[in-house]
Amino acid sequence: MAIQDIKEKLHSLIEQTNNEVLLDDLLSEASSRIHATSPHEAEGLSKSDYQELISLMNEAPEKDTTSYNELKSSLRRWFTK
Image (cartoon, rainbow, N blue to C red; front, side, top):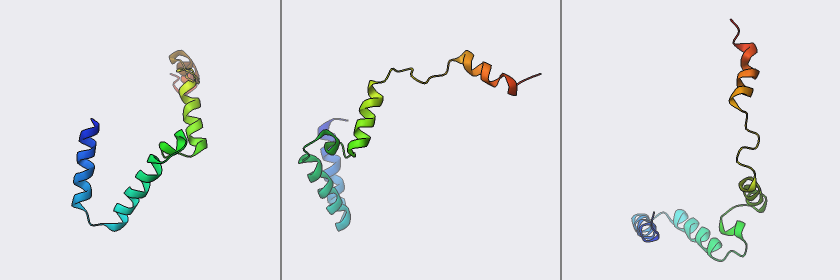
């Protein structure tokens, strides 16, 4: 979605509500992310969650993947004739 579309939707939602708690939450979240000093804060994540995501992103795509033949072999005992 284009940034301008997101801004318009946010403006519309803000104008539609009088929920003070919701508006305060939006303000607090936006302020904390805009003034963030580290990548995990800007993404709204804990440092450990951010590091885990980076680690997962850098793993080999097929790490811990079971091949079809390995799966068939492991399930063979359950599907006997």
